[in-house]
Image (cartoon, rainbow, N blue to C red; front, side, top):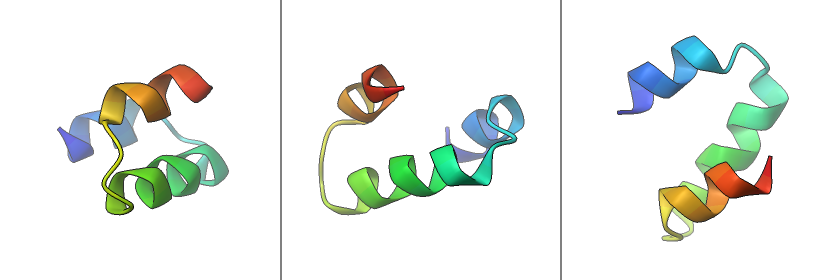
Length: 35
């Protein structure tokens, strides 16, 4: 799942935000909807 998202998300800034939210234990869908 993570590798797939990286392919569609070349912007490391956005990925960093997603990774932070994911590590905080938040649902991936919540992070995805933020951008």
